[in-house]
Image 1 (cartoon, each protein chain N blue to C red):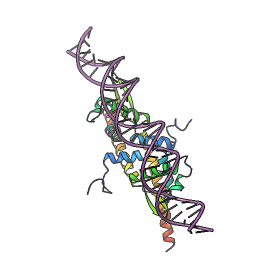
Image 2: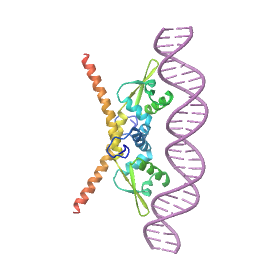
Image 3: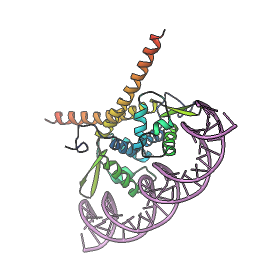
Image 4: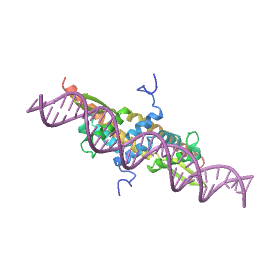
Length: 117
Length: 117
DNA sequence: TGTTTATGCAACAAGTTAGTTGCATAACGA
DNA sequence: TCGTTATGCAACTAACTTGTTGCATAAACA
């Protein structure tokens, strides 16, 4: 099984960068925030309140879909989008790892300073 | 005190998007990962191992610096860069909020299904 | 069936990003 | 002081991103 096709293994760095990049746009971050209610929303619904065309919102949704942050189900003539929180959890794990290494560094520094008293 | 100058208040969405965007590049994510050791590194040190020029790495470091993910201290002729984990913690908080709302949705769904047994 | 509503697709423009090269400056060290 | 090392600044290019408009399609519905 390849790393990228697994749902449990650690993502490679480039995949994490893509998820970060997908969230690195204010419009997309607002869409994610709105979809965090857990409900499915149509494109027209999601586009309401943005000073952008429906097509622009569609493009943003496709970017989010591309990294697995949302998925869409077509019901009749509507595309219902829903959040998939898994990629955000992967980012949380990455951030936690970086924070841990940083904290370990602070501990080493603290021990060094205490041992030289 | 304005929201953006505070060190404790919640960031506005556009600031979060900028931090996500800063991490949304594989080269910058590698730099952050390398700097997670807590040590300060010069630009030349950080550029080693990348198939890029020193100037390209410098630009990436300035992007990270722009959102507060790193800071540099000039010692002699060297610029020493060091990680600042605070912005990543802000992202962790954002992700946790989205996850919580998502979990609340699942709970409501579960309760609804159980009540209709 | 004819109209309205929801979406998809494609082409285009403008702005941003990521990278390069060339040159300048300034600190180290023999 | 002179050569080497570390960095900064500016101009330029290529590619990508973000947004638009116009048109096509397909479902809902009176």
